[in-house]
Image (cartoon, rainbow, N blue to C red; front, side, top):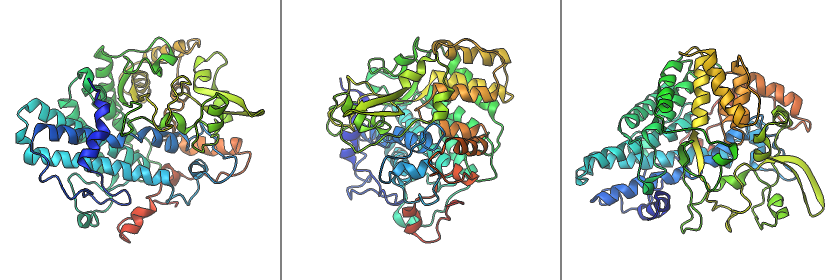
Length: 499
């Protein structure tokens, strides 16, 4: 039987539900619109599958906008201007950067598709005779809409809240909403998903969010909201909801459905997908038409390394070096370092001494098409739930120092390190950096922990030997509103400060 991920893009092709990628127009390209499409249960299933298409680039966004923005990479290029340089170097003129534009448009495309399905479930859902399926489809759509909006609020702060299909003219009258209003929709959607999603799916539906994925997402939302405000309209609002998050994390842990893998490398093995450590991942499959494979394993890896290994990968990517600061953060015994980071190589007789992330690459699985990798991207894994619990406890939620130390030592032991005691928030942040390097969490962690405005300036001073980075300012916690959005209607949006 085909897996769920095999249906995603074919369903998208059938529906043609993509909205315009250059603005917030909430109308389908196809003129054979939803009014005549939703006549049987399978139509709703295809519409649900189509929403997932906009998750395909989610890992790339985390690597390009979170990992590259952070102190994990000193991403200067070897020649020519690369799109990631302005991201890493805090340039003011990145409103037209394709990574920034994609983060806005792809997420809103996903929001649109979710809104269409929710609207049609309300209008035409009576054709679905299985009430449990109808409820599940609504919960899936709300989970995904919240997922897209959470991505948006972390990147841009205030964004337009659109909770139903809207015409082009209607969108032109919708301003950016306060961050708290964006969170209201996110929390409401995730609470519904938590109540109504199943705990598990049949094998054919692996990859759809479960009740535990909704708990994980909602816990992270509460924690992000509880972060420092930095006196900007960003993702942190000082909500002090650590206890709310801890309740959800404890429910995931107490379920007994998840556990740590015995080795770090097995978490990311191509032959160990959907393991007990995975709570929610984005599913990929290679060799299909249309392509439903991933791009992210290749994003941070230079072409010449693949070529030095006898792999004919051609995409024009040069090295995006791992920072010296991160390299020095690993203990010599830490087994995660060698798996995550490639420390130099030789190509055509020339030695490259800089390091880069290779965490998702299995050289025996390199696809013919560089944008068609088969490995899934893990969004929420059990190790993260444990670490988030430790963070909540250190922030004042129920628990003890012994609980925190026990959590951290589970992961240190797996990494080949000695146990430690009296873990502080500063130490926990370091442990998270090493455990989740190259997974796109570092920038979000720095912001949530309330230290991005001290860590990054100090890092720039120490790391920027080429003197290419701009001084950091707290406004750079957010990205600029894409220029294409500002140009749609003059005065509808005000650009984020600092750009």
